[in-house]
Length: 248
Image (cartoon, rainbow, N blue to C red; front, side, top):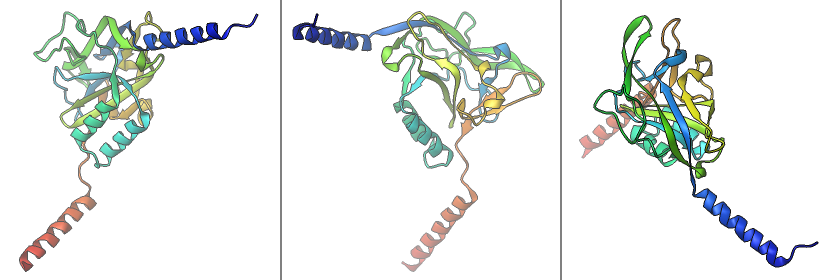
């Protein structure tokens, strides 16, 4: 039996309405973030290997356009885009995963910079790095029901990035993807990133410091120093300008 035109029209209308409604629904899932050296994982530090301040934000989510992301990274590395311009480009191309982060972290949060609404460096851990044991600033915590928008997409690559003191690090792992349903948990553990992934898609901006023993480091990448050629060009322009002033 053939379906009438009216019944087919109703079916299409209902399908369209459902698609719109589902596109605006937020889903919830358990989310754990581990960046405290647990399970032999590295910790994220500055390019010099020093601690990043407690309260520094850790951005977790999705870059909407990977071409723009790669261009932003290249521009930062070759010096055509400064720190603030790069941050703006990254933020405009990024969708944060989750909005319900009021219960991020746990009872051992420390420091005055702990945030109740954002993922941040929220605690310390006693770690041995290259033979030296000390309390290091790290991040670690979990959220029972983190809200995320279905507009981010299912099974979408998840990125983690940190910006601090004119330095930026962007990292991900192939296992870091958005949930496939509202019941699927997600764990972002830095121990899935290794030195072997340096220069690969897992360490997009930054570097890996591998030690024979103890905790390894994921370092941020600093704004590049001006090259010798660039400094010579600046000097040449300066000399030309001075000569013109003398002729006036």
